Amino acid sequence: MKRHLVSAADLSRDDALLILDTAEELAQLSGRAVKKLPTLRGRTVVNLFFEDSTRTKTSFEVAEKRLSADVINFSAKGSSVSKGESLKDTALTLQAMGADAVVIRHHASGAPARLAQSDWLHGSVINAGDGTHEHPTQALLDAFTMRRHLNPGAGQDLAGRRVTIVGDVLHSRVARSNVHLLNTLGAQVTFVAPPTLLPIGIENWPCEVSYDLDSVLPKTDSLMMLRVQRERMNAAFFPTEREYSRRYGMNGRRMAQLPDHAIVMHPGPMVRGMEITAEVADSPRCTAIEQVANGVSVRMAVLYLLLGGAVFADAPTDTPRTDSVETAQ
Ligand code: NCD
Image 1 (tube, rainbow, N blue to C red):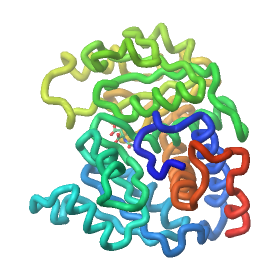
Image 2 (image 1 turned 120 degrees about the vertical axis):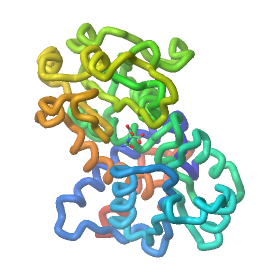
Image 3 (image 1 turned 180 degrees about the vertical axis):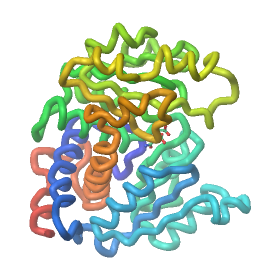
């Protein structure tokens, strides 16, 4: 069994479906008056955030609390990291306090992998976004949302579904994790972006590339808009915002070109008027808020499976531990 979740590429199809199916069961909890399970009672989970976050951080915290874990929130601002303390010393400190899992967001690509490979921490490491590298729980909540709309039902994957991902792919850990997971689940991925916002070597990724959003829309089941990540840019990647929006922004006219069943996704934070107009963001086809709610269920499932001692990779996947989900209520 794998102890960590660092990359979406580490998940087999069975692992991914187990997480999605477990998340479906746990989602039922959010409709109840008392939204708690005792599953992680007595376990300590540390949220170690070196980068800003609204959705991911609160979503992990809600997930941990719904599973009754003891939660410690650690942000670099206001900690000894701002005095120059290293990742290693921070990790050793958390280990000394008995952390059973560390959820880490870091500006450096590879920081969660470094923690997972080290002997600084004995618990599980969950990547909540590292630099421009990966954001596996975002890809899982995106897949969960797509499955609900496009191919609902336990055990179902996304085979043959066409997913178009638009915008700043170069700086997007969401795009990287999505391309891995969507391929594992059988979907076809097309990236649409200005050439300057596509990574070198994209031709070796398991996806297609287009520079013409309008031509791809009618063949899209799920359209995922990405924010332009200015905080990761040190040069001009496109002439003007207006030019970017005109070619790569989602608006009402373009939404009308999508098939009726298609959804518009966004991981947040949205920059209205840039990659998405208010008309699209506020339309019933936009799943941005639904994705946030689904994020709680998916993160509960990940924590439950990693810390609850089930079943990634080499254990049989036909017996998810739903027994304890049910009996623990
Ligand atoms: C994304 C991230 O931080 O990578 N947001 C998120 O986690 N929901 C995308 C972004 O910041 O644009």
